[in-house]
Image 1 (tube, rainbow, N blue to C red):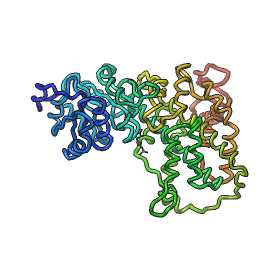
Image 2: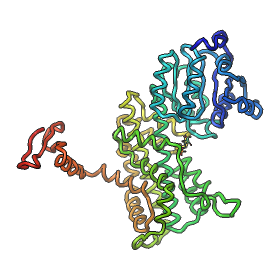
Image 3: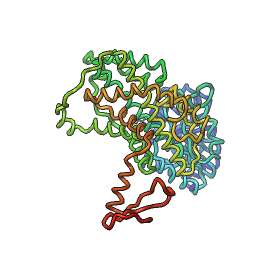
Image 4: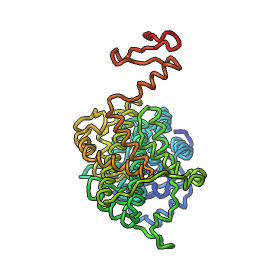
Length: 489
Ligand code: 6PG
Protein backbone atom coordinates (compact mmCIF):
# COMPACT_ATOMS: atom_id res chain seq x y z
CA UNK A 1 0.00 0.00 0.00
CA UNK A 2 2.99 2.31 0.26
CA UNK A 3 5.06 3.50 -2.64
CA UNK A 4 7.88 1.21 -1.47
CA UNK A 5 7.39 -1.24 -4.33
CA UNK A 6 5.90 0.56 -7.29
CA UNK A 7 7.07 -2.17 -9.65
CA UNK A 8 4.69 -4.62 -7.96
CA UNK A 9 1.75 -2.44 -8.96
CA UNK A 10 2.69 -2.52 -12.60
CA UNK A 11 2.79 -6.29 -12.86
CA UNK A 12 0.13 -8.92 -12.72
CA UNK A 13 1.74 -12.23 -11.93
CA UNK A 14 0.76 -15.76 -12.78
CA UNK A 15 0.45 -17.27 -9.33
CA UNK A 16 -3.08 -17.77 -7.99
CA UNK A 17 -1.82 -18.12 -4.43
CA UNK A 18 1.34 -17.31 -2.51
CA UNK A 19 2.73 -18.88 0.63
CA UNK A 20 5.17 -17.05 2.87
CA UNK A 21 6.80 -18.99 5.70
CA UNK A 22 8.09 -22.28 4.38
CA UNK A 23 8.69 -24.39 7.46
CA UNK A 24 7.08 -27.82 7.25
CA UNK A 25 3.42 -26.68 7.49
CA UNK A 26 3.93 -23.86 4.98
CA UNK A 27 5.87 -26.05 2.55
CA UNK A 28 3.28 -28.79 2.69
CA UNK A 29 0.38 -26.42 2.10
CA UNK A 30 2.26 -24.84 -0.82
CA UNK A 31 2.82 -28.32 -2.29
CA UNK A 32 -0.84 -29.17 -1.72
CA UNK A 33 -1.90 -26.09 -3.76
CA UNK A 34 0.62 -26.96 -6.49
CA UNK A 35 -0.57 -30.56 -6.65
CA UNK A 36 -4.08 -29.22 -7.27
CA UNK A 37 -2.85 -27.37 -10.35
CA UNK A 38 -2.38 -23.90 -8.84
CA UNK A 39 0.68 -21.83 -9.55
CA UNK A 40 2.15 -21.02 -6.15
CA UNK A 41 4.43 -18.08 -5.38
CA UNK A 42 6.92 -19.01 -2.69
CA UNK A 43 8.52 -16.69 -0.17
CA UNK A 44 10.56 -17.22 2.95
CA UNK A 45 12.68 -14.97 5.12
CA UNK A 46 15.76 -17.00 4.20
CA UNK A 47 15.87 -18.12 0.57
CA UNK A 48 17.50 -21.43 1.58
CA UNK A 49 14.13 -22.87 2.64
CA UNK A 50 12.51 -21.81 -0.63
CA UNK A 51 15.30 -23.44 -2.60
CA UNK A 52 15.13 -26.59 -0.49
CA UNK A 53 11.43 -26.89 -1.27
CA UNK A 54 12.05 -26.33 -4.97
CA UNK A 55 14.92 -28.85 -5.05
CA UNK A 56 13.07 -31.56 -3.20
CA UNK A 57 9.52 -31.05 -4.41
CA UNK A 58 9.66 -28.73 -7.40
CA UNK A 59 8.11 -31.49 -9.51
CA UNK A 60 4.88 -31.29 -7.45
CA UNK A 61 3.63 -28.48 -9.71
CA UNK A 62 4.15 -24.86 -10.75
CA UNK A 63 6.06 -22.68 -8.30
CA UNK A 64 7.37 -19.14 -8.60
CA UNK A 65 10.55 -18.51 -6.60
CA UNK A 66 10.67 -15.04 -5.05
CA UNK A 67 13.26 -13.45 -2.80
CA UNK A 68 11.65 -10.21 -1.66
CA UNK A 69 8.15 -9.25 -0.65
CA UNK A 70 7.96 -6.96 -3.68
CA UNK A 71 8.80 -9.90 -5.96
CA UNK A 72 6.31 -12.04 -4.09
CA UNK A 73 3.54 -9.48 -4.61
CA UNK A 74 4.48 -9.07 -8.27
CA UNK A 75 4.24 -12.83 -8.80
CA UNK A 76 0.59 -12.94 -7.71
CA UNK A 77 -2.57 -12.56 -9.77
CA UNK A 78 -4.96 -9.86 -8.56
CA UNK A 79 -6.70 -9.79 -6.21
CA UNK A 80 -3.60 -11.20 -4.58
CA UNK A 81 -3.97 -14.05 -2.13
CA UNK A 82 -1.09 -14.66 0.25
CA UNK A 83 -1.06 -17.26 3.00
CA UNK A 84 1.18 -16.54 5.98
CA UNK A 85 2.51 -19.64 7.73
CA UNK A 86 4.80 -18.22 10.39
CA UNK A 87 4.87 -18.32 14.21
CA UNK A 88 1.89 -16.73 15.97
CA UNK A 89 2.47 -13.39 17.68
CA UNK A 90 5.13 -10.83 16.72
CA UNK A 91 6.50 -12.76 13.69
CA UNK A 92 2.99 -12.80 12.20
CA UNK A 93 2.55 -9.06 12.78
CA UNK A 94 5.90 -8.38 11.11
CA UNK A 95 5.02 -10.36 7.97
CA UNK A 96 1.53 -8.81 7.79
CA UNK A 97 3.11 -5.36 7.82
CA UNK A 98 5.57 -6.29 5.07
CA UNK A 99 2.76 -7.65 2.92
CA UNK A 100 0.53 -4.65 3.56
CA UNK A 101 3.33 -2.43 2.26
CA UNK A 102 3.29 -4.08 -1.17
CA UNK A 103 -0.33 -5.18 -1.48
CA UNK A 104 -3.15 -3.11 -3.01
CA UNK A 105 -6.86 -2.51 -2.48
CA UNK A 106 -8.85 -5.72 -2.33
CA UNK A 107 -5.85 -8.04 -1.95
CA UNK A 108 -6.21 -10.81 0.62
CA UNK A 109 -3.82 -11.66 3.44
CA UNK A 110 -4.49 -15.01 5.10
CA UNK A 111 -2.99 -15.99 8.44
CA UNK A 112 -2.95 -19.80 8.61
CA UNK A 113 -1.18 -20.05 11.96
CA UNK A 114 -2.68 -20.73 15.38
CA UNK A 115 -3.27 -17.05 16.14
CA UNK A 116 -5.14 -15.80 19.19
CA UNK A 117 -8.56 -14.71 17.89
CA UNK A 118 -8.37 -11.31 19.57
CA UNK A 119 -5.16 -10.64 17.60
CA UNK A 120 -7.05 -11.63 14.46
CA UNK A 121 -9.88 -9.20 15.28
CA UNK A 122 -7.30 -6.43 15.73
CA UNK A 123 -5.43 -7.30 12.53
CA UNK A 124 -8.58 -7.56 10.44
CA UNK A 125 -9.65 -4.11 11.54
CA UNK A 126 -6.23 -2.61 10.82
CA UNK A 127 -6.05 -4.19 7.36
CA UNK A 128 -9.62 -3.18 6.50
CA UNK A 129 -8.64 0.42 7.25
CA UNK A 130 -5.88 0.02 4.65
CA UNK A 131 -8.25 -1.43 2.04
CA UNK A 132 -7.01 -5.00 2.45
CA UNK A 133 -8.90 -8.17 3.32
CA UNK A 134 -7.53 -10.10 6.26
CA UNK A 135 -8.54 -13.70 6.80
CA UNK A 136 -7.64 -15.55 9.98
CA UNK A 137 -7.85 -19.20 8.99
CA UNK A 138 -7.55 -22.07 11.43
CA UNK A 139 -5.85 -25.02 9.78
CA UNK A 140 -5.86 -28.42 11.43
CA UNK A 141 -4.31 -31.73 10.53
CA UNK A 142 -0.63 -31.29 11.23
CA UNK A 143 2.05 -31.82 8.59
CA UNK A 144 0.30 -34.73 6.95
CA UNK A 145 -3.00 -32.88 6.74
CA UNK A 146 -1.36 -29.78 5.29
CA UNK A 147 -0.01 -31.87 2.43
CA UNK A 148 -2.92 -34.20 1.78
CA UNK A 149 -5.96 -32.26 2.92
CA UNK A 150 -6.45 -30.38 6.18
CA UNK A 151 -9.62 -29.09 7.81
CA UNK A 152 -9.71 -25.33 7.22
CA UNK A 153 -11.62 -22.77 9.29
CA UNK A 154 -11.39 -19.39 7.56
CA UNK A 155 -12.86 -16.27 9.13
CA UNK A 156 -12.69 -12.73 7.76
CA UNK A 157 -14.89 -10.77 5.39
CA UNK A 158 -17.49 -12.87 3.52
CA UNK A 159 -16.48 -11.07 0.33
CA UNK A 160 -12.95 -12.45 0.49
CA UNK A 161 -14.31 -15.97 0.72
CA UNK A 162 -15.78 -15.65 -2.78
CA UNK A 163 -12.30 -15.42 -4.23
CA UNK A 164 -10.44 -17.49 -1.66
CA UNK A 165 -12.98 -20.14 -0.67
CA UNK A 166 -12.85 -22.28 -3.82
CA UNK A 167 -9.06 -22.69 -3.54
CA UNK A 168 -9.18 -23.57 0.14
CA UNK A 169 -12.07 -25.96 -0.35
CA UNK A 170 -10.20 -27.72 -3.13
CA UNK A 171 -7.08 -28.42 -1.08
CA UNK A 172 -9.00 -29.34 2.09
CA UNK A 173 -9.92 -32.88 3.11
CA UNK A 174 -13.22 -34.15 1.74
CA UNK A 175 -15.73 -36.46 3.43
CA UNK A 176 -18.54 -37.91 1.29
CA UNK A 177 -17.52 -35.40 -1.36
CA UNK A 178 -18.04 -32.46 1.02
CA UNK A 179 -15.02 -30.19 1.63
CA UNK A 180 -13.76 -29.82 5.19
CA UNK A 181 -13.68 -26.04 4.79
CA UNK A 182 -16.34 -23.38 5.03
CA UNK A 183 -16.53 -19.68 5.83
CA UNK A 184 -16.91 -19.57 9.61
CA UNK A 185 -17.80 -15.91 10.15
CA UNK A 186 -16.28 -12.41 10.24
CA UNK A 187 -12.91 -11.31 11.68
CA UNK A 188 -11.74 -13.65 14.46
CA UNK A 189 -14.41 -16.36 14.04
CA UNK A 190 -12.11 -18.82 12.23
CA UNK A 191 -9.32 -18.62 14.75
CA UNK A 192 -11.76 -18.74 17.66
CA UNK A 193 -13.28 -21.94 16.33
CA UNK A 194 -9.80 -23.42 15.71
CA UNK A 195 -8.89 -22.52 19.30
CA UNK A 196 -11.90 -24.40 20.66
CA UNK A 197 -11.11 -27.28 18.28
CA UNK A 198 -7.72 -27.47 20.00
CA UNK A 199 -9.34 -27.27 23.42
CA UNK A 200 -11.51 -30.25 22.50
CA UNK A 201 -8.35 -31.96 21.21
CA UNK A 202 -6.77 -31.48 24.67
CA UNK A 203 -9.86 -32.90 26.33
CA UNK A 204 -10.04 -35.87 23.95
CA UNK A 205 -6.39 -36.69 24.58
CA UNK A 206 -6.75 -36.39 28.35
CA UNK A 207 -9.72 -38.77 28.35
CA UNK A 208 -7.81 -41.25 26.16
CA UNK A 209 -4.90 -40.97 28.59
CA UNK A 210 -7.18 -41.71 31.54
CA UNK A 211 -8.65 -44.75 29.77
CA UNK A 212 -5.11 -45.99 29.10
CA UNK A 213 -4.13 -45.51 32.73
CA UNK A 214 -7.26 -47.28 33.99
CA UNK A 215 -6.44 -50.31 31.85
CA UNK A 216 -2.75 -50.16 32.78
CA UNK A 217 -3.05 -49.62 36.51
CA UNK A 218 -6.57 -50.91 37.10
CA UNK A 219 -6.14 -54.16 35.19
CA UNK A 220 -2.35 -54.44 34.93
CA UNK A 221 -2.43 -54.58 31.13
CA UNK A 222 0.68 -54.04 29.01
CA UNK A 223 1.00 -51.31 26.39
CA UNK A 224 0.65 -53.92 23.63
CA UNK A 225 -2.54 -55.32 25.16
CA UNK A 226 -3.99 -51.84 25.55
CA UNK A 227 -3.09 -51.09 21.92
CA UNK A 228 -5.30 -54.02 20.92
CA UNK A 229 -8.17 -52.63 22.99
CA UNK A 230 -7.88 -49.24 21.28
CA UNK A 231 -7.73 -50.90 17.86
CA UNK A 232 -10.96 -52.68 18.73
CA UNK A 233 -12.57 -49.49 20.09
CA UNK A 234 -11.72 -47.77 16.83
CA UNK A 235 -14.16 -50.02 15.00
CA UNK A 236 -17.18 -48.69 16.94
CA UNK A 237 -18.62 -45.43 18.31
CA UNK A 238 -15.15 -44.24 19.28
CA UNK A 239 -13.85 -44.48 15.70
CA UNK A 240 -11.54 -41.45 15.44
CA UNK A 241 -8.07 -40.34 14.42
CA UNK A 242 -6.87 -39.93 18.01
CA UNK A 243 -8.05 -43.40 19.07
CA UNK A 244 -6.46 -44.88 15.95
CA UNK A 245 -3.07 -43.27 16.57
CA UNK A 246 -3.24 -44.15 20.28
CA UNK A 247 -3.06 -47.80 19.23
CA UNK A 248 -0.09 -47.00 17.01
CA UNK A 249 1.80 -45.12 19.70
CA UNK A 250 1.14 -47.91 22.22
CA UNK A 251 2.43 -50.51 19.77
CA UNK A 252 5.71 -48.75 19.23
CA UNK A 253 8.80 -50.44 20.71
CA UNK A 254 11.76 -48.35 21.83
CA UNK A 255 14.78 -49.37 19.73
CA UNK A 256 17.23 -48.58 22.56
CA UNK A 257 15.66 -50.54 25.38
CA UNK A 258 13.28 -52.92 23.67
CA UNK A 259 10.51 -51.63 25.96
CA UNK A 260 7.25 -50.08 24.78
CA UNK A 261 8.09 -46.52 23.74
CA UNK A 262 5.27 -45.13 25.93
CA UNK A 263 7.04 -46.59 28.97
CA UNK A 264 10.24 -44.64 28.31
CA UNK A 265 8.75 -41.27 27.30
CA UNK A 266 8.95 -38.72 30.14
CA UNK A 267 5.43 -38.27 31.52
CA UNK A 268 5.39 -34.47 31.40
CA UNK A 269 2.90 -33.13 28.83
CA UNK A 270 3.80 -29.88 27.15
CA UNK A 271 1.56 -27.29 25.52
CA UNK A 272 1.92 -24.43 23.10
CA UNK A 273 -1.02 -22.47 24.47
CA UNK A 274 -4.22 -22.99 22.50
CA UNK A 275 -5.80 -25.08 25.27
CA UNK A 276 -4.96 -22.39 27.80
CA UNK A 277 -6.46 -19.74 25.51
CA UNK A 278 -9.65 -21.79 25.24
CA UNK A 279 -10.03 -21.91 29.00
CA UNK A 280 -9.23 -18.22 29.46
CA UNK A 281 -11.85 -17.33 26.87
CA UNK A 282 -14.36 -19.70 28.47
CA UNK A 283 -13.79 -18.01 31.83
CA UNK A 284 -14.51 -14.62 30.26
CA UNK A 285 -17.60 -15.93 28.49
CA UNK A 286 -18.79 -17.75 31.62
CA UNK A 287 -19.02 -21.11 29.84
CA UNK A 288 -18.15 -24.15 31.98
CA UNK A 289 -15.70 -26.06 29.77
CA UNK A 290 -14.67 -28.26 32.68
CA UNK A 291 -13.28 -31.03 30.45
CA UNK A 292 -10.91 -28.71 28.62
CA UNK A 293 -9.88 -26.99 31.85
CA UNK A 294 -9.12 -30.33 33.51
CA UNK A 295 -7.07 -31.35 30.47
CA UNK A 296 -5.03 -28.15 30.55
CA UNK A 297 -4.47 -28.48 34.30
CA UNK A 298 -3.61 -32.18 33.96
CA UNK A 299 -0.79 -31.19 31.59
CA UNK A 300 0.34 -28.52 34.04
CA UNK A 301 0.22 -31.03 36.90
CA UNK A 302 2.28 -33.56 34.95
CA UNK A 303 4.90 -30.85 34.53
CA UNK A 304 4.85 -29.81 38.21
CA UNK A 305 8.08 -31.68 38.82
CA UNK A 306 9.03 -30.37 42.30
CA UNK A 307 5.53 -31.02 43.63
CA UNK A 308 5.43 -34.49 42.10
CA UNK A 309 8.90 -35.35 43.44
CA UNK A 310 7.94 -34.18 46.92
CA UNK A 311 4.73 -36.19 47.04
CA UNK A 312 5.40 -39.42 45.12
CA UNK A 313 4.68 -42.34 47.41
CA UNK A 314 2.53 -40.46 49.95
CA UNK A 315 -0.10 -42.58 51.67
CA UNK A 316 -3.03 -43.60 49.50
CA UNK A 317 -5.21 -44.86 52.31
CA UNK A 318 -6.89 -48.22 51.98
CA UNK A 319 -7.27 -49.13 48.32
CA UNK A 320 -9.90 -51.37 46.77
CA UNK A 321 -9.43 -54.60 44.82
CA UNK A 322 -8.70 -54.57 41.11
CA UNK A 323 -11.78 -55.33 39.00
CA UNK A 324 -12.34 -59.09 38.85
CA UNK A 325 -13.54 -59.26 35.27
CA UNK A 326 -11.21 -57.72 32.72
CA UNK A 327 -13.67 -57.68 29.82
CA UNK A 328 -16.47 -56.12 31.87
CA UNK A 329 -14.23 -53.37 33.21
CA UNK A 330 -12.75 -52.70 29.77
CA UNK A 331 -16.25 -52.26 28.37
CA UNK A 332 -17.11 -49.97 31.30
CA UNK A 333 -14.06 -47.84 30.49
CA UNK A 334 -15.06 -47.69 26.82
CA UNK A 335 -18.51 -46.44 27.73
CA UNK A 336 -17.17 -43.96 30.27
CA UNK A 337 -14.76 -42.65 27.66
CA UNK A 338 -17.54 -42.21 25.13
CA UNK A 339 -19.86 -40.44 27.59
CA UNK A 340 -17.06 -38.13 28.78
CA UNK A 341 -16.15 -37.36 25.20
CA UNK A 342 -19.74 -36.36 24.45
CA UNK A 343 -19.58 -33.97 27.41
CA UNK A 344 -16.31 -32.46 26.14
CA UNK A 345 -17.81 -31.76 22.72
CA UNK A 346 -21.05 -30.46 24.25
CA UNK A 347 -19.02 -27.99 26.30
CA UNK A 348 -16.86 -26.94 23.35
CA UNK A 349 -19.90 -26.31 21.15
CA UNK A 350 -21.48 -24.26 23.96
CA UNK A 351 -18.35 -22.12 24.04
CA UNK A 352 -18.52 -21.60 20.28
CA UNK A 353 -22.20 -20.60 20.54
CA UNK A 354 -21.34 -18.16 23.35
CA UNK A 355 -18.36 -16.70 21.46
CA UNK A 356 -20.46 -16.32 18.34
CA UNK A 357 -23.18 -14.49 20.29
CA UNK A 358 -20.66 -12.27 22.07
CA UNK A 359 -18.92 -11.17 18.86
CA UNK A 360 -21.92 -11.35 16.51
CA UNK A 361 -20.32 -13.95 14.25
CA UNK A 362 -23.38 -16.06 13.42
CA UNK A 363 -21.39 -19.28 13.46
CA UNK A 364 -23.41 -22.33 12.40
CA UNK A 365 -22.43 -25.18 14.76
CA UNK A 366 -23.55 -27.90 12.32
CA UNK A 367 -21.08 -26.55 9.75
CA UNK A 368 -18.23 -27.09 12.18
CA UNK A 369 -19.23 -30.68 12.81
CA UNK A 370 -19.24 -31.10 9.03
CA UNK A 371 -15.77 -29.68 8.42
CA UNK A 372 -14.25 -31.49 11.41
CA UNK A 373 -15.25 -34.88 10.01
CA UNK A 374 -12.03 -35.05 8.00
CA UNK A 375 -8.53 -33.61 7.93
CA UNK A 376 -8.35 -32.34 11.50
CA UNK A 377 -6.91 -33.88 14.64
CA UNK A 378 -10.32 -34.43 16.29
CA UNK A 379 -11.85 -36.06 13.20
CA UNK A 380 -14.22 -38.76 14.39
CA UNK A 381 -17.12 -40.78 13.17
CA UNK A 382 -19.43 -39.31 15.78
CA UNK A 383 -19.12 -35.82 14.29
CA UNK A 384 -21.74 -37.02 11.80
CA UNK A 385 -24.05 -37.42 14.80
CA UNK A 386 -23.24 -33.90 15.98
CA UNK A 387 -23.99 -32.54 12.51
CA UNK A 388 -27.34 -34.41 12.48
CA UNK A 389 -28.18 -33.06 15.94
CA UNK A 390 -27.60 -29.41 14.92
CA UNK A 391 -29.34 -29.95 11.56
CA UNK A 392 -32.39 -31.08 13.47
CA UNK A 393 -32.24 -28.27 16.02
CA UNK A 394 -29.79 -25.43 15.30
CA UNK A 395 -30.62 -23.87 18.70
CA UNK A 396 -29.86 -26.98 20.72
CA UNK A 397 -29.02 -25.74 24.26
CA UNK A 398 -26.60 -28.64 24.69
CA UNK A 399 -25.67 -31.68 22.62
CA UNK A 400 -26.53 -33.84 25.62
CA UNK A 401 -30.24 -33.46 24.95
CA UNK A 402 -30.12 -34.39 21.26
CA UNK A 403 -31.90 -37.78 21.05
CA UNK A 404 -28.85 -39.76 19.87
CA UNK A 405 -26.52 -38.36 22.55
CA UNK A 406 -29.14 -38.55 25.25
CA UNK A 407 -29.57 -42.26 24.70
CA UNK A 408 -25.80 -42.80 24.28
CA UNK A 409 -25.31 -41.29 27.74
CA UNK A 410 -28.22 -43.24 29.20
CA UNK A 411 -26.62 -46.46 27.92
CA UNK A 412 -23.25 -45.48 29.42
CA UNK A 413 -24.21 -43.90 32.70
CA UNK A 414 -23.97 -47.02 34.90
CA UNK A 415 -20.56 -47.93 33.46
CA UNK A 416 -19.43 -44.34 33.85
CA UNK A 417 -20.32 -44.27 37.56
CA UNK A 418 -18.67 -47.67 38.14
CA UNK A 419 -15.46 -46.47 36.49
CA UNK A 420 -15.34 -43.29 38.57
CA UNK A 421 -15.95 -45.27 41.77
CA UNK A 422 -13.41 -47.96 40.87
CA UNK A 423 -10.75 -45.41 39.93
CA UNK A 424 -11.30 -43.58 43.20
CA UNK A 425 -11.06 -46.82 45.16
CA UNK A 426 -7.84 -47.73 43.34
CA UNK A 427 -6.32 -44.26 43.72
CA UNK A 428 -6.14 -43.67 39.95
CA UNK A 429 -6.52 -39.99 39.00
CA UNK A 430 -9.30 -39.42 36.47
CA UNK A 431 -9.98 -35.66 36.44
CA UNK A 432 -11.53 -35.82 32.96
CA UNK A 433 -13.89 -38.75 33.57
CA UNK A 434 -15.00 -37.56 37.00
CA UNK A 435 -15.43 -33.89 36.14
CA UNK A 436 -17.46 -34.83 33.07
CA UNK A 437 -19.71 -36.98 35.23
CA UNK A 438 -20.06 -34.20 37.81
CA UNK A 439 -20.89 -31.75 35.04
CA UNK A 440 -23.61 -34.06 33.78
CA UNK A 441 -24.95 -34.63 37.29
CA UNK A 442 -24.90 -30.90 38.00
CA UNK A 443 -26.83 -30.08 34.84
CA UNK A 444 -29.52 -32.63 35.51
CA UNK A 445 -29.87 -31.73 39.21
CA UNK A 446 -32.98 -29.70 39.93
CA UNK A 447 -31.63 -27.73 42.91
CA UNK A 448 -27.94 -26.89 43.10
CA UNK A 449 -26.17 -25.49 46.18
CA UNK A 450 -25.89 -22.17 44.33
CA UNK A 451 -28.83 -20.97 46.45
CA UNK A 452 -26.61 -21.22 49.51
CA UNK A 453 -23.79 -19.42 47.67
CA UNK A 454 -26.22 -16.60 46.98
CA UNK A 455 -27.31 -16.55 50.62
CA UNK A 456 -23.70 -16.27 51.77
CA UNK A 457 -22.94 -13.53 49.25
CA UNK A 458 -25.93 -11.61 50.47
CA UNK A 459 -24.87 -12.11 54.09
CA UNK A 460 -21.33 -10.76 53.78
CA UNK A 461 -21.69 -8.36 50.88
CA UNK A 462 -25.37 -7.47 50.49
CA UNK A 463 -25.07 -8.84 46.94
CA UNK A 464 -28.82 -9.73 46.87
CA UNK A 465 -30.58 -12.80 45.47
CA UNK A 466 -33.54 -13.80 43.35
CA UNK A 467 -36.50 -15.83 44.70
CA UNK A 468 -38.12 -18.93 43.21
CA UNK A 469 -41.56 -17.37 43.73
CA UNK A 470 -40.83 -13.93 42.24
CA UNK A 471 -39.96 -12.38 38.90
CA UNK A 472 -36.44 -13.77 38.13
CA UNK A 473 -35.21 -10.21 37.55
CA UNK A 474 -36.34 -8.99 40.99
CA UNK A 475 -33.58 -8.83 43.66
CA UNK A 476 -33.97 -9.26 47.42
CA UNK A 477 -31.79 -8.67 50.45
CA UNK A 478 -32.06 -9.97 53.99
CA UNK A 479 -31.12 -7.53 56.73
CA UNK A 480 -28.60 -9.96 58.24
CA UNK A 481 -27.13 -7.56 60.75
CA UNK A 482 -30.56 -6.14 61.58
CA UNK A 483 -33.83 -7.90 62.27
CA UNK A 484 -33.35 -10.56 59.52
CA UNK A 485 -36.36 -9.30 57.62
CA UNK A 486 -36.26 -9.23 53.81
CA UNK A 487 -36.38 -6.14 51.64
CA UNK A 488 -36.70 -5.83 47.91
CA UNK A 489 -33.47 -4.37 46.52
C1 6PG B 1 -3.98 -29.25 14.71
C2 6PG B 1 -3.20 -29.24 16.01
C3 6PG B 1 -2.08 -28.27 15.90
C4 6PG B 1 -1.01 -28.47 16.95
C5 6PG B 1 -1.48 -28.13 18.33
C6 6PG B 1 -0.59 -28.74 19.39
O1 6PG B 1 -5.17 -28.98 14.79
O2 6PG B 1 -3.40 -29.57 13.69
O3 6PG B 1 -4.04 -28.86 17.05
O4 6PG B 1 -2.63 -26.99 15.87
O5 6PG B 1 -0.52 -29.76 16.88
O6 6PG B 1 -1.44 -26.75 18.45
O7 6PG B 1 -0.87 -28.07 20.53
P1 6PG B 1 -0.10 -28.25 21.86
O8 6PG B 1 1.38 -28.14 21.54
O9 6PG B 1 -0.56 -27.14 22.70
O10 6PG B 1 -0.43 -29.60 22.36
